[in-house]
Image 1 (cartoon, rainbow, N blue to C red):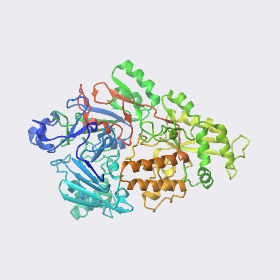
Image 2 (cartoon, rainbow, N blue to C red):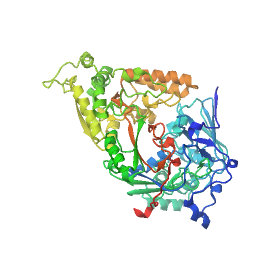
Image 3 (cartoon, rainbow, N blue to C red):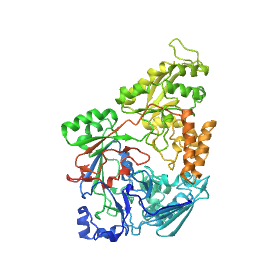
Image 4 (tube, one colour):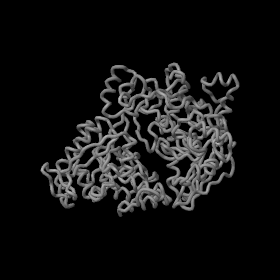
Length: 639
C-alpha cells in the first residue's frame, strides 16, 4: 500500500484520541484555582482542545506536587524539552510512530505528509495553535536569508530540493517532496526534534517584516545582539528552553531564565492531554531542576531528587543500593541501556595527521585494535558481568539484530591482531617493543576524552594493557566537552572515546543515519559529516569506497517505500559497518541505574534508557508521573 493512515494510535502509545463527549466534565488543577476565580484564566474546558489527547497509563493519578531533578549545568533546561516529549508525532511505548500534538496524520507515496491539528489547541499563553505557526516558520524563518543564511534546513530537503508546504485551512498542514522522505517523521519524533512550527504571535515583534522599525532597532540595541536576526534567533530557541517568555506546547513552562542555581517549571494551563477521568495533565504542578556538580549528583540523588538517571553511572549502583536499603526513601531500578555500546573508541578517519590518517584508514589496523581488546575482562572487572561484550552495533532487542554483528572482529585474538599489523608493514618495533609508524615515530595513540569518570578511566586502562600486547601504546588527553568536540571536528584528534550509537535498537523504519557519514557529530569521520551537513561548503568529501557505499545506501533508504525494502538496505549497512570496524566497541547494554522516589507513581520498573529513540524518560510520558505525597511547591524567589 502506498498510503499509510495514522488516524488512531495503538493502546501501546499511551495515547488515544479522546472526544469531549467522553467526559461529563474536565477536571482542572487546583494550582490554577485562584487565577480562574480572578478571571485571569478561563475554565479548564475552554483551555483544552475540543478533542484532547487522552493518556493511558498503569494507574490513574492525582494532580499536584512537584518533581525535583538534579542537573549539572544551567544549559540543561533543554533536557526538560526531551523529557516532556510533546511532539507533533511521537514514538509510542512500542517505538512506533503515532500522532501526539497533531490529531492525526497521513502519508501518501512516502512523500506527501498531511497533518490535522486539534481544534481549539492553544499555546501556553492562550493564543491559538494553528497552521499559522507552521506558515510563520516556513515562510518567515526557514526561507529568510537573514535568519537562515544557509537556506532551508537540509532535513527539509530531498536531493537538495526543499518541500512544497501548504496550509489548506487553519487545522491542516501539508509537506510534499518530489521523492519519498522516510526521515521526516522520525526527525519530528526525536529527543531534540525538528521543530517545524513557531509561535509567530510572539516572535513577530523581533522580525523585520512585522515589527515597528524603531522599536525593533531599540530592542536590538538593548539586547546587545548585533542584528535583528540574531535577536530573533536568540528569542526563538524552543529546544534550549531558556526563554521564559517563549510560548510552548510542553507540559511545563520555564519560570526563570538563566543563569540560576534552580529552575522552576510550572504546569502549562493550556496543555493538550488529559487522563481517562478527564483530569488535565500534567499531574505534577511543577518540575524543579537544582543545579549541582555532576560529581555530587549520585550522592545527592536519594535525598534531593525524585527522578534521577542523568549523571548517574553504573559504578554508582552499589552505593545507591546501600542508601536505598538504609533510607527506604527511593527505589533504585536498573533499566536496559539502549545505546549501541557503553564506551566506544572512534578512530578519526578525517584526522589532519597524514601518517595516522593513512594507518587508521587501513581496515586491518582497525580490525587489529578491535581484536586485541579483552571485552570479557572489561565486562567482568568493571560491569560485574552484567553487560554484553560487543561491537558498537544494534542490540539483541533490535528486530535487525544478528549475532555476528556483535562478535565479528570483536573476539579477542592477539595472534591474528599482530599478524594484521605486520601485514600492513608495521612490523618494526622500538626498544620498548612499541611498533613504529611509517615515519619512524612510535605507534602511540592519543585518545581524546571528555570524561572524568573513574569508570571510563578504568576501561581505557584495560584497553591500553591489551593493546600493548600487539605493540601499540595509548595515552588519554582529557579536555572540556566543547574543546574535546572542537578538536575532533577540526581534525586535530586521531582517536576519541564516546558512548556508542544513540539508537541501538532500531527498526527498519528508523533512520540508519548514525551508521552513515552524514553528521559532524559522528566522531569517526566528522569532516565527512560536515561536508554533508553544509552541502559541501566545509569539511571533506567522502573518499573511501565502503564509506561512500554507506552514504549511497542512506539515500536509498530515504527513497524506500516499504519496510521490506528498508530492511534489506539496513542489512547491507550493518554488514559493511561490522566488517569495516569504523568504531571499536567494548561492552553493550550495561544497565542504567534509575533513582525513583517511592512517592512517585507510573515510572516503569523495567524499561529502556535511550536518548534516541525515546528521549530517555520522555517516551514514558512524565506528564503521567504523579506523587501520592506532596511537599510545598518551590518558588522562583527561593533562588
